[in-house]
Length: 119
Image (cartoon, rainbow, N blue to C red; front, top):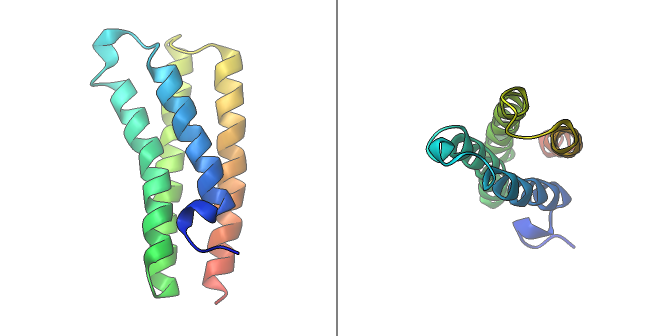
């Protein structure tokens, strides 16, 4: 039974992405600390934060709005992963692994939004 936002499978999967993003951005050049590294971390954290905040809202319309914001942050992170790969901050294996995880979270979030809107 789902009692708190951490019980949500979509939040759990997104949280795994956050942890991976923190791990790989530690390896970025130090001059990226306030650039791409920071942006990627903020976008990743925004995904889980908006899922959590949406969970606590009372109206389904309001819940869905926060889930849509999480969706936007996820798309932003996908773009930033492409940039990180293209400037050789991450290799193709790291990129593919993280991108696949984001696609999985994307599918979960879309299903979650659809279910929320049906109430």
